[in-house]
Length: 84
Image (cartoon, rainbow, N blue to C red; front, side, top):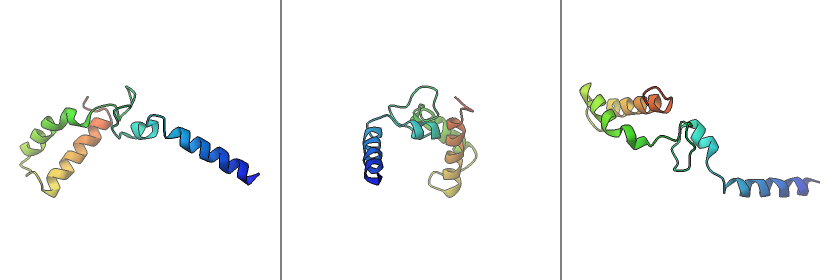
């Protein structure tokens, strides 16, 4: 009986690799096949220039820890749909 379940598990795992990335897309990770309305649907480059200008307007320097933190926070806000 254990071999039967192992076979089923392997079959399901191999089939799921062919599907889109629903869990990643729902968690906000961008993939080209994310469905509209999921946090991962938006292209992360969509806000790149605006986010760079926003963080630099705070006096932060590209490459610094503070700049990186700023970009991560803005990205999280975009993924949450706060600034679409």
